[in-house]
Length: 359
Image (cartoon, rainbow, N blue to C red):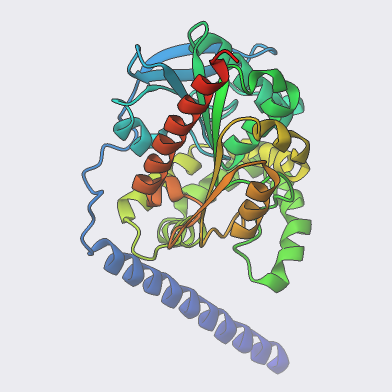
């Protein structure tokens, strides 16, 4: 009995220490987040998620409805089509929608199972299918004989590579230029934010953890945990997705809301698709038109070295490294991204005009 009491006492002390440690961590998180939110925030009044275009419904080959929106100048000679990344939606192109509306005709769309688009059969989730979805979007949203510049972030860049693989005839015809942002042609696993010794464990355990949390009650529990994460979610998002420690808290909050809106089973299905992605075969096709590869110098999800390798494998492609920016460079350094898109559109338009000149 005395021994049992001693063990109970030790257990009680250990539990008390653990509870106190957890409480201290939570308090520290609240203090850290509170200090961050007290800083001047130029994006505080930015209407994230409120800028909308003319809705267009596109039906994919398997019947999934894809939500697209058209903005900008209807009379513009070039349509810029934006493909968003994994667990995101077209809303992350907020700054580009705002700042390019006077320059071109703009098309934004939600990839299947993301944003306002319909849910996909898990068996149809693949990067190849996303490429076919993009072809369907182009067929419906681009005027006959129109010219297109494709812009893809992360998984959206992989979508463009899949289109180039399956329909190379579009490049140099309808598609006159490509902008690839924070993306890679292969070897994508999302573990770059982990300390190097833990990355092999993350690659091994990631798929199993996601599969285990993506069905029934487990999915409900995972969703509740995500919703309750609070300050920890803010700090984690700020560290993983951005490179500048002074990034706007409003931007971090906005991104966290967009990602949290993506169901956990969709997160799991598309993560497995990313692991299988290898579109090196498509890069020569992309190189038939002007192309730029843009990366945040502090991207923790897709290493800048992978972006450099991608640019080197695309004939004639230009590499742009953005200092103090992470994976979400489109929200973190939007002025740089928008300027590079403008520059590429001008270059692509000039190159396309040269191709049409008689010999």
